Amino acid sequence: MESIRFNTATIEAIFEEAERILLDNTNITEALYTDFNPDTFDALNAELLSRAAGNAIVYCLWSGKGRGSMAAKYIGHAAGNISRQRIRAHLTRKNERTGAQLDKVKAVLQEGHCIGITMVRIEPPYMRKALEEWLIAKNSASLSWNRTGKIKVLLTKVLGSNPTSSSPLP
Image (tube, rainbow, N blue to C red; front, side, top):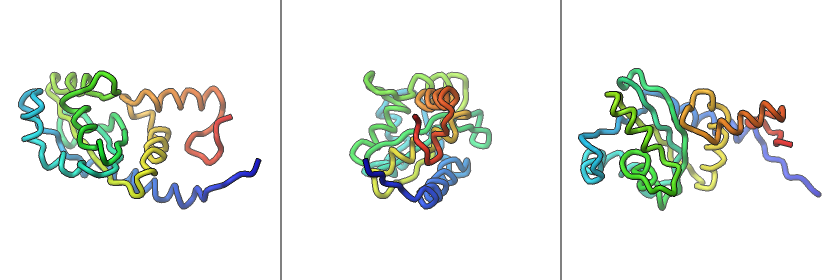
């Protein structure tokens, strides 16, 4: 079988720029809440939701006592046709069929802490999945809400391969 090899240095340089933007806590937009009524959430966070709407995105959910003390918790992606709804699923209303983090978000808010989000628009849109996977693999130790990343890190330890490198898992 013939092999196709991508230039990982070029791809990872772009991914590192996305990582820098996404994991920069000065880019956090705090989600505003008065209750868990989706209509209230939409009104309070209209600007946040409009930035996501219609764009292929990779996003990071943050939590902490305040904006200056927030830590990255979860990285995900969404296609342009569902990006607004995906953000809402994490932050205010969840379809039971999704892996949305709403239960964890509610627990953080009940502790009196804050929730924030950073987002980066991805062009071309099909690269969002590869970027998300790369970010989770690279940052899984600090992303306590990402189950997928934890599983990949465990596989890496067991199988001895680095998922962020150009060599695939055996």
